Image 1 (cartoon, rainbow, N blue to C red):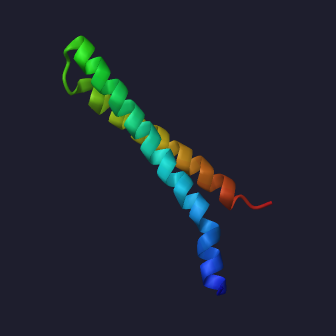
Image 2 (image 1 turned 60 degrees about the vertical axis):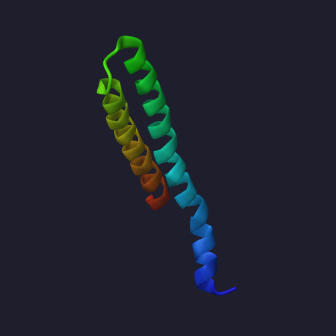
Length: 73
């Protein structure tokens, strides 16, 4: 196995974690927003609020993760 492929394998969990940090809040907030919209009959308002909240929380979470990995000791 070449050095380059070993580096790629070492980065795989990090990229998978980034994917989870984006997808889980997004899916969760869309489900909650859709439920709230149906309950309150305010069709797309809470879905959009959920999308923006999930984008903010995902961005902040990824920023903290990158900061942790790039921290110099």
